[in-house]
Image (cartoon, rainbow, N blue to C red; front, top):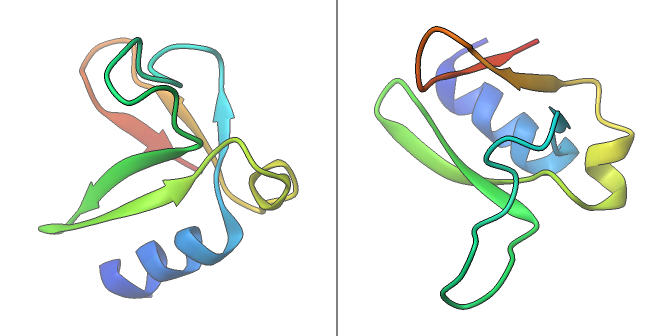
Length: 72
């Protein structure tokens, strides 16, 4: 699967977010139910707090050794 295909699939299915770290922004326009994810130079807004995300086959967690996220 290419990076753009994976991002498109994540955009359609959402992403289960493991833990609270970085889940929602603290201010500005208010909380968001999406996260910006970049893969291979492409960035898309991926749902993380809606029903689709709760039932998604994909999950993610923050890598404790970097500022990156591991998508499983």
